[in-house]
Structure formats: structure tokens, C-alpha cells
Image (cartoon, rainbow, N blue to C red; front, side):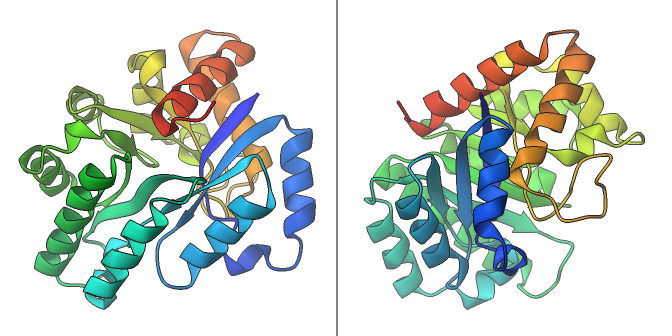
Amino acid sequence: MLFDTHAHLNAEQFDEDIEQVIERAKEAEVSYIVVVGFDGVTIPKAIELAEAYDFIYAAVGWHPVDAIDMTDEHLQWLEELAAHPKVVALGEMGLDYYWDKSPKDIQQEVFRKQIRLAKKVRLPIIIHNREATQDIVDILREEDAFEVGGIMHCFSGSVETAMQCIEMNFLISLGGPVTFKNAKKPKEVAAEIPMEKLLIETDCPYLAPHPYRGKRNEPSYVSLVAEEIARLKELSYEEVAKITTENAKRLFGIG
């Protein structure tokens, strides 16, 4: 029983064979998937998938790369969607200093607005972080984000940063990179972080785990993430699958 806590089945890479992809996920014993919408195109698709499949849920938010495009109407729309019975989180949101489409001050403003909305609608948040760790930690603290908590998605930081995030009521989610031979930090985090604070994800169609690195990722591959964490923690695969699924269900209020 596996829970892929972060998938983009709403991406165009799945337009041709979405049903087969979902079938393979079921065969791999993926019992739950959260599909993440992050802009005007992907959010409706996430809701559509959540409505079509009983084991698929949705998260809705505004991606930092596109922060410059977000309007007050979009924020209002997110608030309305938060009431949908299959919407279990707000996000992904956060900061991305790698791409320069949206200025940093606008990214930070949009991030703060979404945290405040999450506190208003009482939903956990999913954090996207690229080259912006300190600013993200600072904003989460300043905005009292611990009140709702959430997920540090596809975490690539240090054990020390992971512990700071855990103190702020966030779970650490690991994806395909933990299986890469040269991925020192994710492996250290997997080994050190308490099991009850860990989640697994694919971030598909991106970041496929070894041996599919560089190919299209999909939810069935989340089993490879669980296998690597089990190896690093010297636990059984079944234990890792069970605990990470329980952690996710508790966070998202499922079951």
C-alpha cells in the first residue's frame, strides 16, 4: 500500500495514456495519489482526475515561477476550490530562484498570501523550493505556517534544514533523487529523519528514479523510492510503505 503524495498526472506528458498509467499504479499497489495543480491550466485537470478516480485526490495552488501571473481572482478561486471534498492541500507554492520569470518580491508576496489562505481554510500546504531555502524557512516562521503544517516536497536540503522544517510541523517528502547514486543529501535525510516524518512521492512526469532516470516518471515508480528508503533505514519495504501511507493519510485527513 503506497501513497504517491505528489504527482502531475495533469501534465500533457500523460495525455495519450493516462488510463494505462493509472492501471500500472494500481498494479504496483499505489493506493492513493495526490495530483497537484499549480496554474490556470493544471488546476482544473487535477480536480477532474480527483472526481474521476476514487483513490486520486487534488492539491491546488500557484507555482512561484508563475507568481507574476497570479491575480486576486485566482486567489479567490483557490479559496472556493479549497471547499471541494477531494481537495486535501494547497500548493504547490513557495519560492523558485532558479528561474527568473517572476521577481523575488512578487514570489514572496504570492507565497505569503497562499499561506494565509491555507490558515483560513485549514488545509496543509505543499512547498516548492528551488535555491531559496533560507527565505522559505523565514517566511514559514513569520507567517506561523506551523498552524497548518504541510510538506517539503521533493526535499533536497540538508538533515539540519529538514529538522528545522519538522520543528515547524512539516513532513519531509522524498522522490526519485534519493535513488540516484550521487544523491548524498537525500540519502542522508532518508537515513536520519524519523520514519513518522517521512513521505514518498514521484513528482511525475519529472525526476524518475533509477533505473528510469531521464525517462518519463509515473506513480508506479514510487515503489522504487520506498525500496531505497527501506534499504537506507534497514527496514522492510512493507514497513516503509505502511508508515509513509499512514503519515500522508493523517496529514491530508483521508480515511
